[in-house]
Amino acid sequence: MAPRHAANFGWSISMVLRRWQEFAEEVFQDLPHGSRGFHLLSVVVHEDVPTQGALATRLAVDRTVLTYVIDDLEKAGLIERQLDPRDRRARKIVATEEGRKVQAEGEERMADAEEHVLGGLPEDQREAFRDFAGRAAEAIFNAAPGTNPCLAAESVYPVN
Image 1: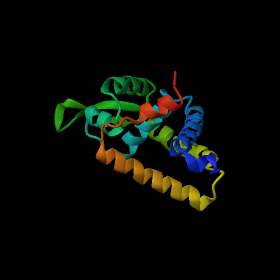
Image 2: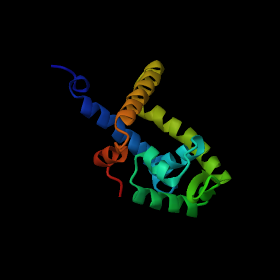
Image 3: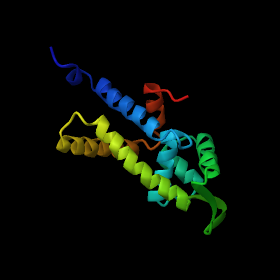
Image 4: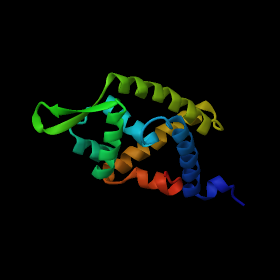
């Protein structure tokens, strides 16, 4: 009989995702919208996304949902909407100084949480897993940019 982990790829990915989600929500419980808020903040800090609409596309999040996340992160003083100097009708989402600080601290906290999630693997296998997962995710995103990763996470671990 094959070990459980070898028999079902879906079960394996779901177990990793569920454990990651548990740690991520614990790590980001003080941040508006938890890990979703952190993900948005990370993209704003590390990437130059020109408009709020482009940010929704990049995050593969419905624009109406994104508006609530942006509103709450803005109320918390972590991001702000700025007029785009190239198109004054458009709004660009930028991190505040406090948002950059929170994001940097969050990256450190998430790295610790990821070590707990993958702690059962030798270090070289943890790095390989991260690399392969990242490559697979990018390939999926490039082939189907409308794929919503939040739907998978919520089906495994619903967020209230």
